[in-house]
Length: 201
Image (tube, rainbow, N blue to C red):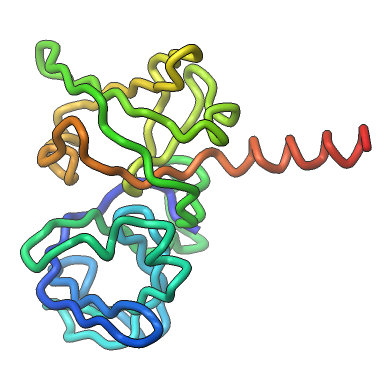
């Protein structure tokens, strides 16, 4: 489990296509320090498993076909940045919200507006997921825990407010309208929906 609090941005330093998927080597400082084989790391919101690593320098992850098809990670080139977060320790501080690292879909940036020191990002949500999003609720975009500032039901769009610290620490500073972002809706909303369906069925 993750919290959506990005620790640092890493850099794609190598990529290799295989018959079964894609292998990425990601350069990082803090996140690549003290790793163990099999640990989970959120890479721009996708939970991936560490296969190899060099302490304090890089780690490698494998993307199976399902991950390649559901995310935009296969479109990344060497030099591209990704948001990184290690799995939350059992005794850790819970600063964000419950994030599984299971990307639901790829959303699209539709507008970016700077207002004084803050930034407002608007995203176009896939139709089947807009029902899980509520104003002031939690949403995960590229692995970042965010609060929904506004929801446009007619256009299927959602706006989030980004503070300077988040803008500077994450890959959001590199995003432009038309760019993709990984979407993970609040898993609690999914459970509530499933329980209600079971009850009324």
